[in-house]
Length: 113
Image 1: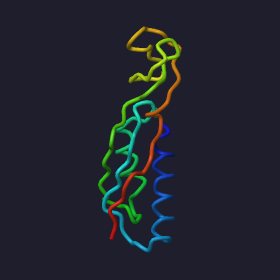
Image 2: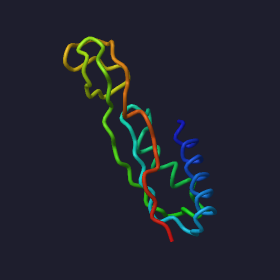
Image 3: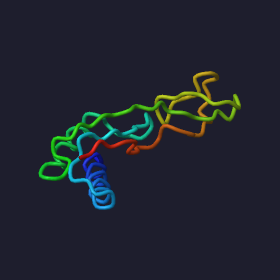
Image 4: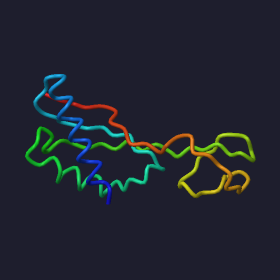
């Protein structure tokens, strides 16, 4: 369960940004979650609530924006959408693919006071 560590890192970023941008409370955090990021959404939500207790983000909404996994098929020589890191190319069935997107977790937007 690396979601706890991810949430601790998110809180660190929120605290740094609160100092830099002079806000005192976070109302909403919008996260872009790639399908290939190996993040479990429900675990992320649970850990976010636990980690932010007593912080500037306590009670903040957590909105997840899901992003599809993208890969380049070396056999087809074209981009394809994949659901997992070990998935075959949906066009030719080859496993000779390289991930090109959907493998990250990023803070996209904050609503703050």
